[in-house]
Image (tube, rainbow, N blue to C red):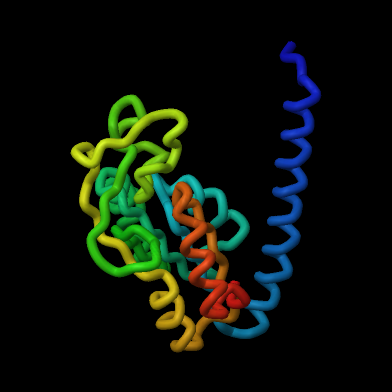
Length: 191
């Protein structure tokens, strides 16, 4: 039998508490959305291969939510496109874009073999991300398109078609400038 060490047990308990919080929150929010007659919107920033989408749609189902999955890694995006091709009619949009604070082209790092390969969960637009573990080379980066997330959110909110907006933001260190921009523009309260 496997022995549970105190730290592993503590992490397990924290994980269980988090699941209970998500479950409680989703039930309340789903009731609110049902009563409103509108849908919610789930923004999955940093979708990788769809792991977060698969987990969260158990609690925030497609019948109640539209989903927008952002993934800048072209290799992961190809997998997402094949995996979820049939869900576009169910309100699932896939966007091959990096979430950031500017529109345009940007370098994407971390897809070298020693960093996880082409499907790396650590791909990032920040060359200094994980710099304690390994260095980055601009010659090993890819050019990807980036979107100003604040502008995107303002456009979505103008339509006034969603009762609630949920944000999953896992963009490998890029969260800080995005959250700062959302805060400075007064947009954080929309989530």
